[in-house]
Image (tube, rainbow, N blue to C red; front, side, top):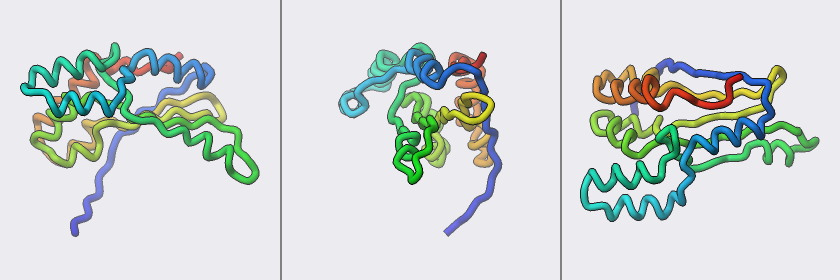
Length: 163
């Protein structure tokens, strides 16, 4: 067994908008395909170009898609006494980007797709995510780092929710 300690960078954006507005903004920016159907099509794809085309068609304006969501606020409401607080975890990514990072660094599959956490706290609604480049840096794979950083510097930077 091997244990490895590392540091990562968490980005947190805070807004005075309502959580429903932030979630709606994010939903407009992400593709929301039927993930089961998409992965069946990806598995049946004959070429890398076909995979890229399928992903591009399913991704949203940020070239990201939602894979899964966990409404943690519902669980808080089931507490005794109930806690009225919105907490939503979205698992988002792009399978082509993930493929490129995992190609040389298999452990990148632990970090991609990424988690977006949207939660209400005193002082506003927060949108948080961990920077992939900071999580992948300890592995020393220049290609995976370049892919992770290009997402941040390119079309993947405009995460919604800021005001």
